[in-house]
Picture (cartoon, rainbow over the protein chains, first blue to last red):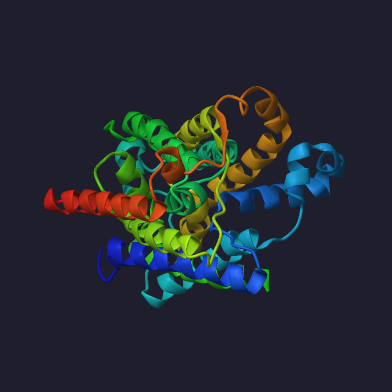
Length: 175
Length: 174
């Protein structure tokens, strides 16, 4: 944990980023927009499905809500965040290719195939659940709770009620 | 313009993610194991600043709220499924791409799974919409209207509560 930022500093800056974002979207785009991340996955899904199964994109109601196009959320999550994280990692000499993390290794060892399979399954449930809930820790957690919206508190409670027990089952075991 | 703004916001956010370490698997799983509260401290302080700023700006009429509709059962069930995926993956949607960018290749498999999850949801959305969304569909509800209190007051009290939680975490050395 050398030379990182305090989570309070990073959090306060993120709160300011949200405020700057709602102000600039209001004044530049003429409509207040909130920050969110999981919709970006839907845009990518629509773009992918448009290539392999265009019929579904034409007929499914969900793709009428989220048409296959590159929008600002896709750019934010799939281009902006990686650039920012990469710059920060390189600048601080922390870029390191890795597959296995300490808390995983303690429970499962260095099994890379298992890690990839769990990550894949996890990613599937993560985005499926986020779309059902209507948002993720960005859309519900940051933007929703900041607006004191009821749906945000219900969803965020769900994140932890689902996540904590499974994390204990998976990672509390010792090899 | 919209795309350039998204790019800039993303770069700043990704930079913050990496510097605070909240994009690390060990930090995210550490929170779910109630052993490392870095991610929670980050989120709570972001919401503290965000709720004061957003509610003040909205009450002054400078911005408008953009509230998601409350579907009690769908919000909760979706949240639960998200939580299961979160424990397995160890990243959330916004941090997964940043984790990959600092070298965590396991995040790549999570992102692939996520795209497939979004496709699966698009194909099953109609069923949820017909059967689950109507249960507890309350509209675009906010806490201040729900308890009939002035939004600014609720925001201040809420931010103060978050500050107390952070104070408690520090006091207990968590």
